Picture 1 (cartoon, rainbow, N blue to C red):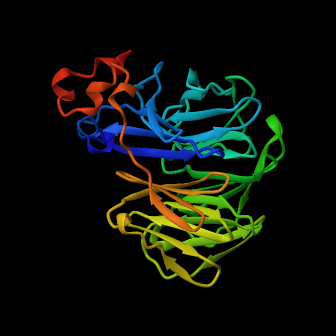
Picture 2: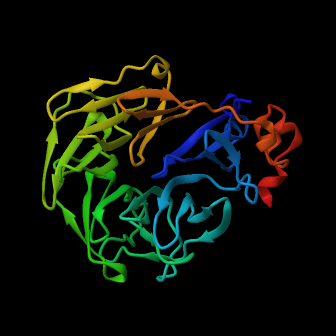
Length: 333
């Protein structure tokens, strides 16, 4: 059964050992605006559901791999809901702020130096610490006013003491310090367009992509706009094997500091790309209905066929057209 015949990918991430963790939505439920996410795991060339949590009643904002102190794959919801999966054992968590403010919509989930961070509206930033605890680390950054158009869309870092975040209106911030001692400073941005993607490259620069094909490069307080010749929104950027890879909705590109090259692979023509992820030796590109791996200079499409024996009984209906007739009571559990 090809589960993407009835569902679409929301987010995806590859682990360092090339396992893949994705969140999908049933297309019929999505059209009816029923909030849910189905976490799926690809391990040893086979897909499986998460038996303890085959479906959750919230939208996934992003996924990331946590390496320390315990290895976990982490899925975070728009409202701060968290599902942590470790060897298919899992636990639900929730982000709570010390200032008692509600968690604003989370727009980005990223792994930096083995830890997991989130960034979102009102410039809220959180870090997953030991165990199941989360810490807000947005001192000097979080916005407490009444303007609803202030927020962050992406976060990344070279390590836990040098973080960067970008967001609406082209804003750029740099975070310094460790633990609760993080302090953020604004950086003068060369653009005022919304920035949607961010990565720290092995070349020592930070790259940020946004609307109208805007691509920024910089570090610390020096940033510039790179003219790469595209006008579509850049939804994802990732550094891999001495190149920067970028995704717009309909195409995937690589940039070698001089030339922008379209990635050519026959099955990518209608991929509707969402995001990129890197494992130890591969680049992964996630689309609504396709997943691709670039390894040893070769692209391949990852099969999205799942054996029905791998489906939890509560999950079967979410991969069928009659899900709306049967109802979605499992979402309320």
